[in-house]
Amino acid sequence: MNVYVLLMWLSLALSTGLIVYILVNRGSLSRRLERESALALERELRREQVLAIASLASGTAQEMGSPMTTMSVLLDEMAAEETDPRRQENYRLLIEQIRDCKTILDSLTRTARLTEPGEAHKVDIVDFTQSIVNQWLTQRTDADARFEVSGEGENPWMTLDLTLGQALENLLDNAANAWSRDILVDLDWDDSEVSISVTDKGPGIPEELIEKLGRPVIRKGHVGLGLLLSHATAMRYGGLLELENPKAGGARATLSLPRTRS
Image (cartoon, rainbow, N blue to C red; front, side):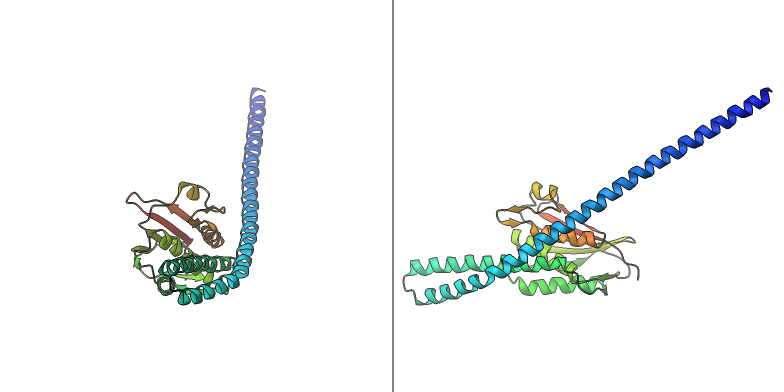
């Protein structure tokens, strides 16, 4: 009889433990699913936000492109005909300001294309990064950048489209606008990921911009739209964009992407 009762209590204890175990696991699974659902919803909302901003940027650039070109041509003609040195200096200042505006518009157009993935190709990441830096240098003749490879072993091959190159050009533009000389582009990798960092020797990145990475931030002298779209591109590849201010000074932006197995 005592053995029978003991077995009953043991059976009850095991059943209770099993039920508790199932309920705890079910609750944990439910919470995990809720977190994953919330993250998926956030990514979708972010994607829609990025598409809307990119569309606005592209439209603005196209609408303002023609008036800027007209004003530039007229000012060139007026400056050539002017004989007063003071007025000539004023015309030159206006021409420079319009040139800066056109550069910003070109940047908006280029960054807007980051939301339009093209055909992907498998590329050698070293050759790919080097070609993007060389291409950028031909466009930004006022800047100077050097390319270094820190990764060891065989060069990784990755399946990429042109949006990643545009994201890298965005980071280079930001670095050049802060400090146009001695920009360092460093490529590194390990077994799991590839990282491309762009480091300048400028005044550093405002903390506000670091905290709000992934959301549009517009400041005097700095447009956070390019960083927003570069961040979105990295996320689309399953990677991320990190901003930091190194202890030695300047600023560093790092694109980290999961490594594609060849």
